[in-house]
Image (cartoon, rainbow, N blue to C red):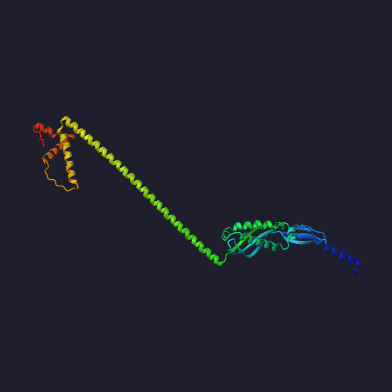
Length: 325
């Protein structure tokens, strides 16, 4: 079939329609926002999915990734408040919330975020001394996140996290810190040892105090018991004396002999147990002592009811013992 002008026109129109369709239909993938420009001016933002634009008049300006992204912050040297030089690196996370501002408010978004983060790391960490820098990393991260997020807000992004990865002091400073830590630990050990000795001395003193108190209480109890025993002995002695007085009043000669003999024997025992030098010549009125002992035996027989007393038997036989000394 010969190619006519009409056929050529139809083919050109078909191609034009196909090109127009491809130019006006845009498919945005998930996690991206595209900006639309008309003659170089921003008009709107295309969301994920199928979108239509005006062919030949509208065009896609920037394809912005709205997923959370991560950037490594390169190492840099920071001078702390106490003039210590440390090397610091980190990592930052951010997310584009407004594609228009992220595309048109800043040139080179990632480079701007890195420079902003590094500058604020020097500012924040340079205002702290080395000890605070090493022990308050969470506080540093929170302060950096707050400052950088406020600064990046006009760019249409959200700083989600900023983490300091490594803080590396110089080698000589690390050695000095190790010596300082060792000295501090030795100091704490000496303090704890001194506290232990002090507590031991206190406990020992308390124990001695309690022992003395218990010993004093024991002496007091013993003295009380001794006094009670002496009191009871005196009471018994008084009762014995009273009984002997009653016996004397009744004319009971044997009771008198028992009392005298008891005192006599006690005196001899005291002589025998005396620590002083002594010479005892016997008999010392031995007949009187024997007579007193016989009187004691007679009293015992009468007390225990041994039938008829020897005195009664002698009275029956007409013999009465001579009790005169």
